[in-house]
Length: 143
Image 1 (cartoon, rainbow, N blue to C red):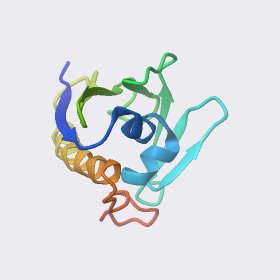
Image 2 (image 1 turned 90 degrees about the horizontal axis):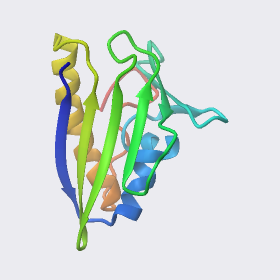
Image 3 (image 1 turned 180 degrees about the vertical axis):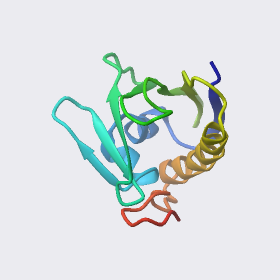
Image 4 (image 1 turned 120 degrees about the vertical axis):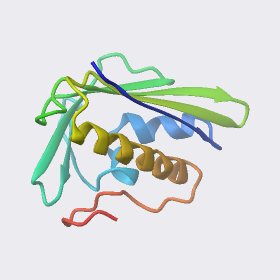
């Protein structure tokens, strides 16, 4: 099974980054503005006026250094995992991101790989106090 993997260094503590990758509110700040969260902690992210909706369930054991989401919907995303591993080093934190469990390396897989790279730069900007907002707004246009 192919996986998407990226690594980025952020000038912020793991404590500052963790809520951005482990909560629906955090994901909405840099990834997708159209977010709703259920009482069980699962999150729905809407894209392109909700033409696409990904439901993510947090893995049962979150640690302050790792957040993992299991994708419950999406033709190619279903049963994949999004993992953010935080690697503190002084005033900086490395973020190792993996989107694992893809069935095959399709054109959509390649497109998602590119998009995840850009999203991690938005995560870094948000964590460093230079947020530009989420890539995917509630309207059908991506910015």
